[in-house]
Image (cartoon, rainbow, N blue to C red; front, side, top):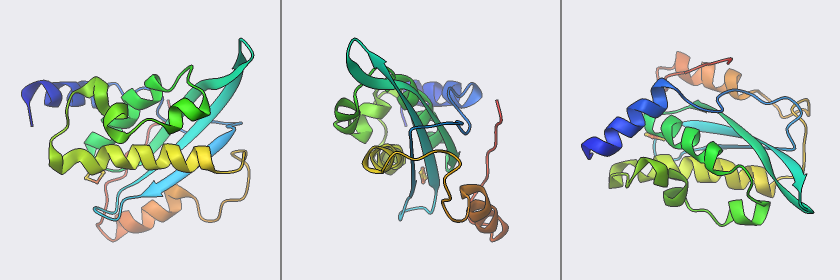
Length: 156
Ligand code: FES
């Protein structure tokens, strides 16, 4: 991985933006990677701006690798002010663009973020209180117990 990309990923992990669950989210999307078993959940809140419905805030919780956390951190910043259609059009590569070009082996980490975003935008509006089966945390705790993933929690 290029030193520059690596430095940006490290910086994003040291100070991840928009990490944590969002209360009263308008949309929630969760996705798991078939490649590595990592998971990511994204919450989105919309607002009206100049007659358009745009993303006010997006947050995430990741039970995944550091690259996925870094991509989610920059992507949730990137999403602010975008309409659902504009957000939907973004590829994993575009979501990760602030970090620079990811090496091929890390592309699926950005796709995990893209998948969570698409899942949120495709879903019916739901609230954080909506019953959604086992929580991501309980699913991941199980996986962690099995030694499959590393759980990173942050309640900021
Ligand atoms: Fe699985 Fe990065 S290694 S998301």
